[in-house]
Amino acid sequence: MNSRKLFCTAVMLAFTASAIAQDGGLKIYISADMEGIVGVVSDAQLAPDGFEYERFREFMTAEVNAAIDAARAAGATEFVVSDSHGNGQNLLIDKLPDDVTVYRSWPRELSMMAGIDDTFDGVIFIGYHASTANTRGVRAHTMSSANITSIRLNGIEMTEGSMAAAAAGHFGVPVIMVSGDDAAVAENQVLIGNIEGAVVKWAKGFHSAETLTPEAAYEVIRTRTKSAIDRIHEFQPYVLETPIELELTLKNYTPVELLGYLPNVERVNSHTIRFVGKDIIEISNFLSFVDEFRIDLQP
Image (tube, rainbow, N blue to C red; front, side, top):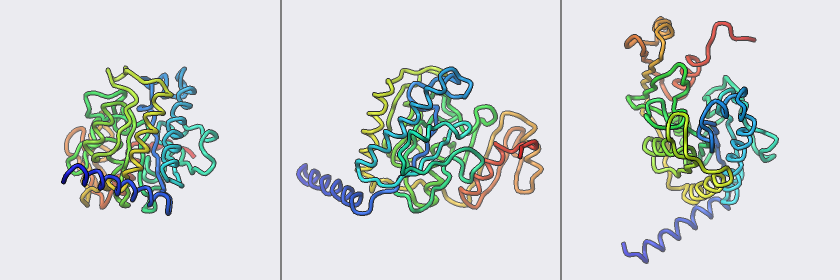
């Protein structure tokens, strides 16, 4: 194909995406974590008792708003936001647009993707991080840095992003953009596909990074979000073959021993169990149970 034909094809595809957006509008799901937010490097920014936490809640909220603003300008009309970090109560909801729906706190079915269904056109990840198997990445972990050392689905080492993408893919919805550090963006692009990536910092260690300033990060997120919306028709849902085999490796012996008592759980070795779910919903809910259940939970 010559350059003129390539140019014409690109123009037609862009026009088609724009027309779709303007006709019916687009419904976008945003899942926001915190380890990948600009400037975050330690618990000082991530936990309520950290001296910078309140300030970084503002940065997290502003990154979500940057994605919303850019997506809205490109044709999106409806947004659902999942507060997906820590206690699930980090976003400053009074600083989000009035027409946004927010999922907060735990437990909730489908965890970081609560509320996803087949009515959405695309998913955006804000502030995501690399997996526990990654040798790079600021605060790299998968679900629980304290308890989990590996999550594999159908033999694939997963990130929180790829698990969330699989939940969206179950409903036929593609992930279109991810923001975070360079390690997180690269890892999720390898697993999920050629999604847009907004790098807001570069990992230099588990607790160190070279980082943009907040305003510069918001601009990167706006730019990459616009690019994602402009080519939203190109993205494919990330779908895992079913049934799905989970291999979960924990740091401690006792929870693995106890989980092995369950009739639908196989203890593979001293630290690993195997569970087979009919789909990603069963897998997600099983993982939520393993990670969150305590006998003394109240009320």
